[in-house]
Length: 86
Image 1 (tube, rainbow, N blue to C red):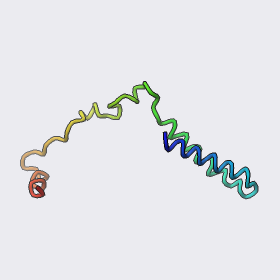
Image 2: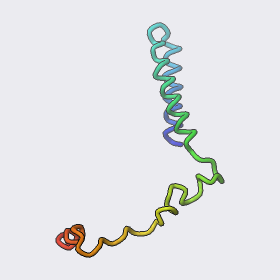
Image 3: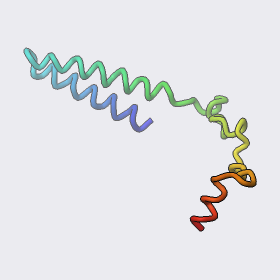
Image 4: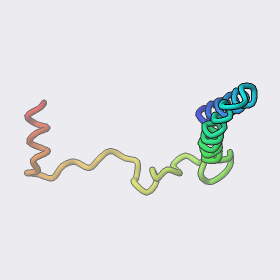
């Protein structure tokens, strides 16, 4: 939510500057619109409290098991490199 608020604030600043400057300053309306869209996207991406996406493990930890990585198989080159490093 921090980035969304920041982008919306930047958008408002560009919009205000474009209106105050006028003339060629109206070219700042394009970055204002761009920052507003990015800020809205960041704010829309935040899950609401109590929604299933806000629950712990909603990012796939359940599917992956969340445990440690499996040990390399015997004779695996990664095992030999790990032994040589230690």
